[in-house]
Image (cartoon, rainbow, N blue to C red; front, top):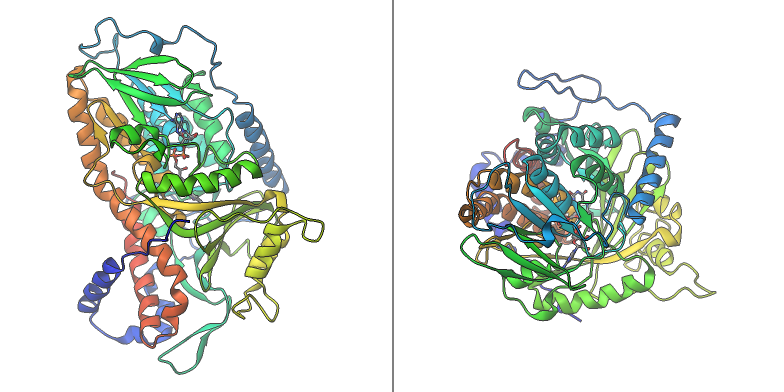
Length: 574
Ligand SMILES: Cc1cc2nc3c(=O)[nH]c(=O)nc-3n(C[C@H](O)[C@H](O)[C@H](O)COP(=O)(O)OP(=O)(O)OC[C@H]3O[C@@H](n4cnc5c(N)ncnc54)[C@H](O)[C@@H]3O)c2cc1C
């Protein structure tokens, strides 16, 4: 078992010190100010906000009609079927693809007759968006995806306002389809709640009841201020289907195609790429969008041979069945060491459940905080709730096999971990009933488990070398707390294509890729750090809340920093 690496709290201490200097009064020490700060940023659900700087109007939540519920659910079914059948992907038997033969003049000028030839490793969010962005700029694109079908993990994801802007710039049709398919979450409350009764104020006694809001986020106003569309939640297979149908030409993705090795021919002369099935491909640019256990990164950074593999991290490539999930859990422990990735300390159970949540009209996203665990839930649209239960424990753990006494081991564990009836969980904590509401609506087979890994920002090693670059989770794996992993991958794809579109001669490629890296590294580094820190602080909230002054101060800092964090995330330029 891998020893869990603890977070470095240095950034928090620095932030805290800075805030202490900047905050002019100590009035925040009263809990009422926690609830009301900052007053101007509270979400108004009644009033329409039409900002002078923007033509985007604030959405007003109306309950989903039965037709909309059916539409969302049917769309998910059809997209999942397409994903399982690799609809829109190439047949591996076609022998006429452009990448099989090298360009006659590989060291050449780049123009509309001889556009850039781009090969992308991995057909997850990063790969598909990068392909769509490069295609929209007139480049030849092919994606090699190792999987034979997509196996989504954990249902829909938040496509936040920043990623929506990137998609809008890449391809209007893709943007419109995503907007149409998605369910707006920015029109209701999001935030952090106390999972169970806990917390003291100045050490004077019980202050916070289970289910109390600690922090509410307004994800709408920062988006509107920046002229961006409100965040939506969209099913992963639907995103894939839209990108396959509207973003790239049919047959761009070649499945069952695992990239093994690449060879740089040097000085703008291109690349020779070898797949595990023996196929050879030739390209001007290779983009590693192959996730946290990236093969391209392994070679780019000269990592050990067992640092890449099949274990999944994100949207695509999830375990197809329980046996595969168990194997992946063990493999990831070994890979993490050689790949210099970090076990986050959390295993994550997830499911998408067909259930109309009791708080659906008021709350779109909430986290119930507890000791060494937290329970995240999001409206998934179509009267479905997506939930994640993150529990702190060593990497590589697996659940017992079902038996006649316990046919639902995952569910049994989770119902105990988030027990809402006395005597509560193993710590004696009695949880808010919302976790149980969702768990009880989730069949055992719908619950997937995965250990969460992330990694340190690749500041010294970089994301590029010669005519090779990495993006998405391969470049900046992060904890899911900010819901930005896929969004940053989307921004990467946009930026990479923008830079590549300036190439006039193949000898320019190396410099242009360096520009891509330099324009992306600061932003993604900050977001990686915030996601990591956020995750570790969430689970340590319990300790914080029992320390006089520190608990309220921690809450204040979280509340006070959120508008700034969201403004940083929701920028129209990246
Ligand atoms: C619980 C959870 C919730 C999340 N919620 C959100 C959210 O709300 N919003 C958000 O934006 N993000 C979210 N994320 C993060 C997001 O899922 C990932 O950041 C995103 O999927 C990364 O995309 P990617 O394409 O870089 O990598 P991946 O999705 O991992 O795709 C990599 C692909 O490369 C393929 N591959 C790997 N190696 C090779 C090879 N050698 N040759 C060929 N193919 C290869 C894999 O099969 C896979 O299909 C969440 C993540 C988790 C775990």
